[in-house]
Structure formats: C-alpha cells, structure tokens
Picture 1 (cartoon, rainbow, N blue to C red):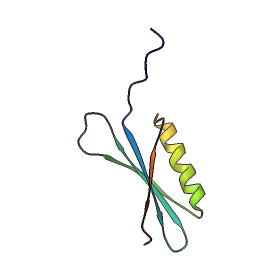
Picture 2 (cartoon, helix red, strand yellow):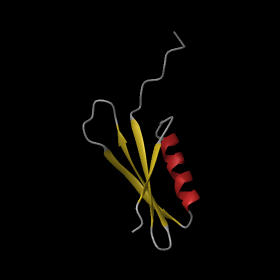
Picture 3 (cartoon, rainbow, N blue to C red):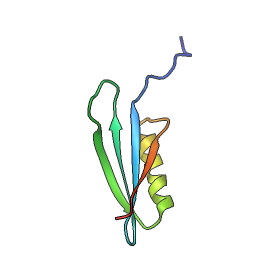
Length: 75
C-alpha cells in the first residue's frame, strides 16, 4: 500500500540566540520512545535570517517535516 503515512521522525527543536554582534543557532532532536533529547550542532551567523535558514536546512537534511524554533533571551 503506497499511501501509508510516513513514520514520525520525532521533534526537531531549534534555538536562535542573540549575542552582541551575532546570532547563534542550535538544535535538539527528540525521537519517539526516547526520554532525553539529543543535542545537535550549533553555528554562529551575522544575521538572524541566516540562523533560521540554517535551522530549516538541518531539519530538512535530517528528515523532519516541521520544526519548532524558540528564541532565547539576549545574552
């Protein structure tokens, strides 16, 4: 049956954090059946838009159809 729903890939949670002159993007993943999330990579960008774009790219490459982006308080 070719019309089956794709198996859930869990949750992709992205974080965007503002620094004085840069934006840091990082993410965590939580797979079905796991209790703790796994920490992913992080990168630093000059613009917030680039940080968000990178998060979308990472989620797509890992097979996530949707992501949750959270903004952290200024540091």
